[in-house]
Amino acid sequence: SSQIVGTDYSAYFQKVARGEIEDDEAFAFIARVDKADREHVFDRPELWTKSLPALGITFPRENIDGMVRTAKQLLSTALSTKRLYFGIPIGATEFWIAEEAWVAVQGEVDEVHLKGCKCWLSLDLSQKNDLTALSICWLDDAGHLHVKTFYWTTKSGLADRGRKDQAPYEQWVEAGQLTAVPGATIDKTFIAAKVAAICAEHEVEFLAFDAAGMADFIAACEQVGFPVWRWKGPDEPEGSGLKLVAHGQGTRRVFEERQLTMPSSIERLEDRILEQTVTIDASPVTYACAANAHVVEDGQKNRAFDKKRSRGRIDGIVTIAMVVGAATMNEAPALDIDALVG
Image (cartoon, rainbow, N blue to C red):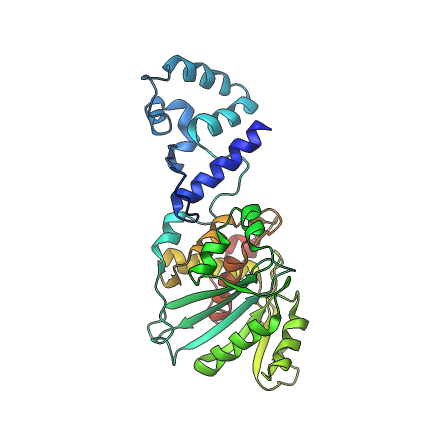
C-alpha cells in the first residue's frame, strides 16, 4: 500500500540523515515535534510549526485545526494525525534508551592503550547469514568501561541483504567496519581465530555467550587449536583455556550463583550509559544495532531485547549488554524495594 511505501521512504531518509546510509541522490530534511512535545501536542498549537514549517504559509492553518479537533475524539484519527502531521512514530520501535545519552558515550576505544587491563568478551553467533557480533569490554584503573565490537557477515548475497535490511553493508565492509567472509554461512573459525588473538594480547577473564550455536564455536576453537571450556557452576571442575559462561537471553532473571541474565545486563548497561562511566567505540554498525533494538518487559519489569520485533539487526547491542553485564556482575546490585515487597 501507499502507506507502507511512505513508511519505507521515511525510514530510509532518516538513515540518510543520521549518516547510516550514503546516498548522494537523496536529500533528507526531517521536521517533527520534539519527544517532550508528544503528549500535549494537540493542546499546544505553538509547537506545530516544528513539524509543519509551512503552516499558515502554503499549508492552511484551518486544515490542521480540523484534523486535531477530530483527533481529540477518535483514537484512530489521533494516531494517524500524530504520525502524519507531527512526525510522531506510532507502534514503531524507538531508540531503546534516551538517544542523547547514547550519543554522549560514543567515542574512540584504543585497544593498545588498554593492554594490561582486565577485560571480558561476549559473543552472539549469526543464524545462517546475518551478523555475528563479538564485544570486548575493558575495565580501566579508574573503574571506567571501554567497549568495542567486531562484526562478521557473509560475502554471498551481501548487496541483496543490504537492500532488504536497509543497511549499507557493502559500505561498511569497504570501510573496515564489518568483515565479510567467503561462503553462504559464516565459518566459525574466523571468530575463533579472532578470540584467540584477543586472548593472546589481553587479560581476558571469560567469554559470555548465547547458547545458540555455541557447540559449533567450541568445535571451531578446537579446529584452530585454541583451548576453551564451558563453566557449568561452582561445584563443577574447572577446565583449561578460555572460560565460557552462558548468558540468558530472555526476561527470566536468576539470582542464584550470580548467573548472567539479560534483565540485569540491560540495567547495568543503562546505568553506565546514564552515568557516563562507559565509552562505546563509535561505529555505524553498532549505532544501527542500537537504533533497531526493541525491548520487551514482563509482568515483573524484567527486560530483554526482542530480535523478532526489532527493526533490523541488533546483534551488536545484544553483545554490548552481555559484556557490560559480565564486567559488572560482581558489583553490588541496586536494591529494587518494589520488587522485593511485590
